[in-house]
Picture 1 (cartoon, helix red, strand yellow):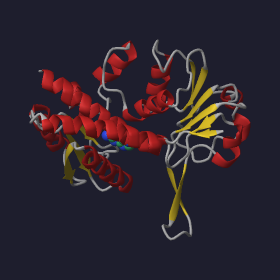
Picture 2 (spheres, rainbow, N blue to C red):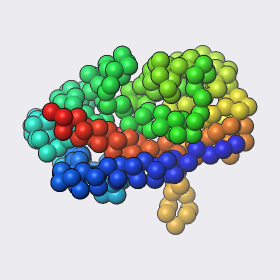
Picture 3 (cartoon, rainbow, N blue to C red):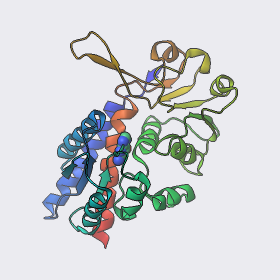
Picture 4 (cartoon, helix red, strand yellow):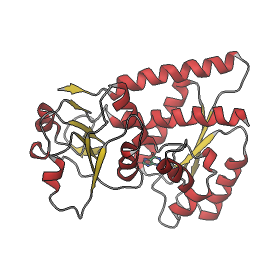
Length: 292
Ligand code: GUN
């Protein structure tokens, strides 16, 4: 069994991005610029946003955070999005999800200029992705592709089972891995809450992607010997440690890992790659912006 070390891949990609930023500054250009909008004080969102800000600093990408109160109206948020759409010094931006209940996520995402949608959530980018055209790929699935590619894991002709059909992970990764591309060319089965025979389907996977958001729900009997297991779950479990919690994934790591050829740990696997994808998309947005 080999661990897929997201932290190590993240370090490699950050070095590549930092070298690009340095080359731009040396040429007298401005640094790429990522903005993020956070509405409210959701603790997980705050921690994501802080992580994004830190990662930007490490690779020489300018970052601006708009912290808005929970009570901010949808109209006000749409005005800020319009402002960022027009700001030529901002290459890409994201609106952190979840949003307060009085704001429509769909309307907010649709208001983002697709050329600045570095989260790859806009219907135009999702449509281009489905058609195999160049687009911003959603961060977590893009991170998974990076891990598969950098570990030279063969995907062509493999049976990939995706557990979970969320808009930001399960559905897009199922499309991305079924495309005529590398990584890709998988035969994909997308499982969800209404799937019958989940255990049998899961146990037939060469590549198993666990993204159902249920802590420790993938057990050893659901995994084929020699499978590649990618764990997308991130769950805080309260405990008596000094920190007060530990993090686990959707996979019962201790019993599943011995059966795998490769497995991503939690933490230190897919999670670290999400922010890296965002940085890669921001660099791409900058390069596209510079061509205009
Ligand atoms: N909330 C959880 N993950 C994400 C993400 O990748 N992007 C945004 N905007 N919000 C999130």
